Image (cartoon, rainbow, N blue to C red; front, side, top):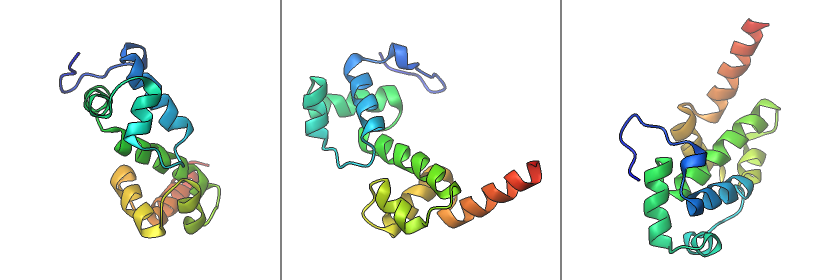
Length: 125
């Protein structure tokens, strides 16, 4: 089933192997997961998984995993952990690689995200 622009597909509507892949990537976000291994685990081919996952989720598996990593990183940063430690904990190779993905997903570099989020929370208190 192809999703048209503006449509959102719920997790209950996704193809079983896409659900398998999504859940695996959410649980193993910090690990290096190859597309071939992920496809084998979920019972399909790498090319088919990549294509259908992209259609149903809106991004390929690697981008999805990076987005999960960034969301987890944002939580850790707000708990006060250092950026370098967070980058490593969530599975990025180095701080610059992490910062690039963080800015792509969150719209801000990590330090600015921390500053703005803490400022917003203080003003809400």
